[in-house]
Amino acid sequence: MAKRVSRKELYDLVWSEPLKILAPRFGISDVALKKACARAEIPTPGLGYWAKKAAGKSMSQVGLPERPPGMDDEIVIGAGLGYWHSSWTKEELLGPLPPPPEFEEPIERVRERIAKTVGKVTVPREVRAWHPAVAKLLQEDEQRRERQRSSSFASWDAPRFDTPFERRRLRALNTVVLAAGLISGKPSINDQEGRSVSFSFYQRQVGIHLDRLKQPRRREPSANSKDANEAKLSLSILQSPGSENVRIAWHDDDQSRLETRMTEIAVQIILTAELQYREGTVRSYEWRVQRKAELEEEERERKRQAERAEQERQKRLEQARINRLLKSAAAFDQAGAIRKYVEAIRETQTGNAACSGEELERWSQWALGEAERIDPVAGGKFLSTMQDE
Image 1 (tube, rainbow, N blue to C red):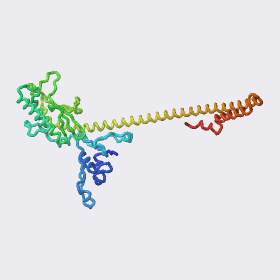
Image 2: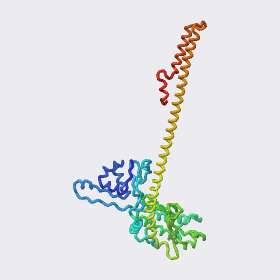
Image 3: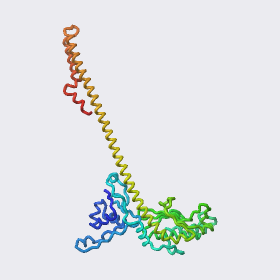
Image 4: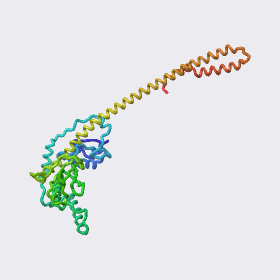
């Protein structure tokens, strides 16, 4: 049976007893439980901790670190299930609702914590170390350059990062990627130019777009044109990776270049992971409230339908009883009519030469037997009219 626990609850559990004793309660091994704690950045007792504690030695407990931006606070643990997500079961949804989500740490405190970790972020004029994801773009560009040198024909797939603007854009991208990595941000470059990038912060995905600032009333310069070197650089944080909706954006302006705001940008990218977590948590709670109400209404409707069906069934049963009663009454009348008829025949046919006494008696016994067979009074057969078939 899967169990949902918070980081604090799981932390308290793993420091209350050995993992080998605790893990079977979740239906997993102690190794799997230790890995689940590692993913949630929950420290666990080291080797020999419990033996030393049992021997009476004073052992210090490693404190629970603050939840990193973007990490889920709830962990789902159970045999055969993922550790970070599991759909709510119907029983869980119909159970008691927890209190609305509250976040003890104010968002500005999270921002300060991120800023302290990131420090001052600057874009160097000369990059000494490229992040592997950005270095791959440059390697692919070098391959284009080599193909162009070795070919006598002009190639449509020309190098993409030869202009000063593109080199500047790559330096800015490299700076952002390195800064995000300080808080577990893993980049994924979604195109060959490095314009669309998504960062994975634990369970959150933050998308950015880094390119020339669009000028709606002017013709945009091509990437290799002279005017492209003077284009304004823009960086947008998207509502979600691949989305066209923008959360917040920065760009060159008359007062400053984008590079002067790189610290603010790096902090905001990481903070967006935490904002997404909080927004998603609130949405999930609101969905759960709505879904619980829907399921309860569905259950009430099911009961109403069952009650209506039972009422209809009882009506059918009662009508069937009435029909059997009417049939029984008709059979009673028929049995009485047969007996009167036999009696009348006996009176009128006694001494009739056309009908021998033996034949009359045989016919009378047969007719009275039929009357006995259909008579509901005989043997209490009339009582069966109340029994449901």
